[in-house]
Amino acid sequence: MTKLLLIAVGGGLGSVLRYGLQGAVQRIAGGGFPAGTLAVNAIGCLCVGFLTAMLTGPFLIREEYRIGLTVGVLGGFTTFSTFGLETFHLANDGQMRLALANVVLSCGLGFAAVWFGYRLAERWFGV
Image (cartoon, rainbow, N blue to C red; front, side, top):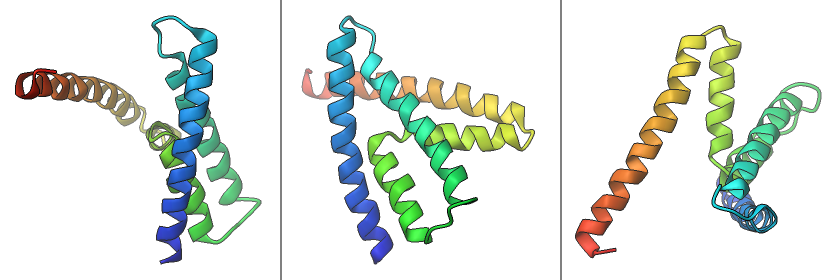
């Protein structure tokens, strides 16, 4: 139960952090490129890599707190960090083809799913 509570609270905190940082970066950058989202995704990936290495090596903490930080806070901040970590693990284990496939498929299918979902909503609801 503690683990789920930490994930829930962390997820809420991560979402609020994402909203604030994404908006601030986008206001500064301006323009049509989603610089705020890119910044959040890159920072989330940096943090998940750093925390995973730190919290499974020199600074061991209880599993529920580690999961609360990585799945909760960073999961709320950006699920892209999980994608980055999983791709890193594949590459780090010498599975470069699978790492590349994960990048291509995740980005390609993600874009296709967003496109399809948007078009479906347009048809159904006249968005």
